[in-house]
Length: 448
Image 1 (cartoon, rainbow, N blue to C red):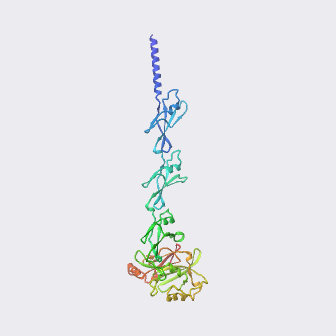
Image 2 (image 1 turned 90 degrees about the horizontal axis):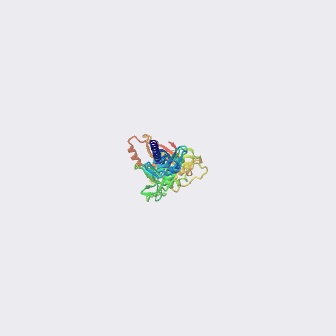
Image 3 (image 1 turned 90 degrees about the vertical axis):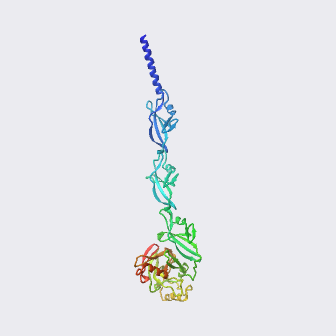
């Protein structure tokens, strides 16, 4: 009886152990979760072994129905189950939201201006997760650049070796164009032409920026210039805006051969009007067109492959008696001419007073064709000059750049008196002809 009792006790204990063990293993649970790599934009894989699968139950079914909470996110089941083989392990893989798995921008680099008021900032797209292309990551990743928010870049650019770059057009007041000092002259009755060079930020087209830059000139507002033009050789003189402004004070006709300028210092100047420059193309120039304290110098040269004669004047050009509207004062001239053997010489100059016409016509009767040179407006030369005080080495006055065959300008005598007074005793030359003439022709510099 004792033996039988002990046998039954041992049998009950063994059964209890078996039942307890089976129950324990029947409580399926995930082992420790392992933080893996990113699987797609904004998601990271977490994985763990499913433990406690009851004997005889399908590992796949057990995994596919087991829920989990990972990093605060609840999952009814894994995104993937992976059986590593009979008797090894069944792994569950979960795609968990993770901001560190989103593409990010590298350091932003400040670039050139891309448009008026816009500057390019660019950065490489980094940490592109698996399954996402460089191009898609660039096109869908927002950014904050210089305090400005962008949902997407303005452009994406694949550089190959250095990766995919996003380019953002950021507001920047430093990318505004600016007009320089305006110069003006009457071009026809009732019209004054104002011109100024445009300061264009790096990276912007001269032409497009000029055409889109507004100005208020002579009290009139312009959304854009009347026209834009490049000056100097291959545009070396910059982009200029020309504004045609209504001006009732402009009278240009045969009795007004000059136009008036007033600079920012208040000094007054005159220059030969365009209409008179056209009329003067019918009359040749020659070396004898000079007098005391108004010297002339001429030499042969080539411009764009064309033989030319360049004639210069500087000093005090005295106005002819009673002709106050005529050119004159202290200044200079730069003219571009050519020889035309056999060209008929004028016998009258009806646009000039008779006495003055005779003064110019008399010398040409005794000169050869080689001693005469005629205006060459067809070259469309870009001319400018500066007169330099030989004592102080400072600028006396300068012109802007003009497209013309003949550029001239003279300060009137009353303004010159004020200039000499401002310089002080002994700080201006005794003779006006001693000012140094520095001039440019199509961007090439000369000095006399």
